[in-house]
Structure formats: structure tokens, C-alpha cells
Image (cartoon, rainbow, N blue to C red):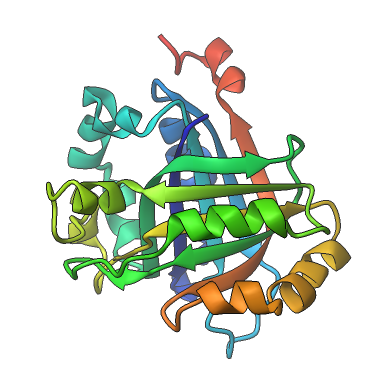
Length: 244
């Protein structure tokens, strides 16, 4: 699975019940039912304090390749959102949406406690800030987070297009027109998975404090902690008509 669609967001508390029903019964199966989308995994923050700057939710969609999101099936879904999607999107907040290609990884088994790093995060429409993805890859290979069972490093397609001078700004998703505010996008994404909560804390408190890690961080980078809520695999969709 060489591609990733990563989404961080909050939702208005007043519509949280509708949000959960929409996500689990409409949005998640619709997206995982599209060709080339291998699975969707939903997470919730482990730090639910109202004072926390962390988004409450993180969702990752594992893709055969990022080209899946340019295919007619996915584009049709974006351009023709359901009424429920339009309603729920109007209540999204603190939205970060990043499409990225896998750069490197280590480990095979997934873990439920996840630390994410949004590297070089910028507002949509702004010129991306460069993040040295090669330096992050070298760091992870030399000093991987020891408490993790798996880590994955991704570079956004925006970064690639910027390097190739085919794009100079972040282009929003068509669904962004229904959301308040402006989406953000990350230049790079690091997903670090753990078997237990204590392991995730070790990564946050020890690995993140290493001088080599600190030297690569920028004030615009964002770290968040999540725990897995739900996972839907494409193989579960084949017997109910979503795969053709």
C-alpha cells in the first residue's frame, strides 16, 4: 500500500451523534468500497481535554497508490457528495487533509496506539514550507522509535509537484467548499504505531526529545496521539456489493 489519504479533524459537539452515524454507516464504507482503497482506519485522540490543540479525530485510508484518488470513481464521489455528507462537512473544524506517497517504513504489525507527526503543515492555498524528508528518513533508520511496533514515513504529492514545479500552492478538495475555514495540508506525514499506551508515551516523552529529532522539527509541525476506534478492510466489502 504505497499511498495514504490522511485526515485530521474536529466536529461540532452538537452533531457528534450524526457524525458518528454518517462516518460508520455511509462515509467509511463508501470510501473503502472504491477501487484501490485497501482499508480505512479511524482514530480518536488520547488527550480529550478541551484545552488540547490536538484534533479529536484522525482517519487514514491506505491506497494501492495515490493515483487511486485521481480515478473517475473517487472524483465522482468528491464532486457528488450526498446530502448527509454536505450537512456533516459544514460542521468539520481544524481540518488537515494530506495525500501522500510512502517513502519508507519499518515493522509489519499494526498497533492501536498511534503518534502522528504532520511535518511542514500549511494552510491550503499557501506555498508549502520545505521539509527535508531525506533527513527524516535517515534519522528513522539510524534512531527509530524503539517503543514502536511500526513506523511509516510519507511525503505529500504536493511536495513532489512543488519540486517538479507543476504546482505552487495546496489545492483544496472539492468537498472543502462545504467546510468552514480553510483546510491545511502537511508536506510530510509520520505515523508511529504502538502495541500499548505506555509505548506511545515513551515515543512522545523520550524519542521526541532526542536532539536529532528536535533539530528537524519546525514550529509549524504538529504531533498528536490517537487510539484506534474502527478499521474497515476492503476484503470485508466484497460480499456486500461494494466491489465490482
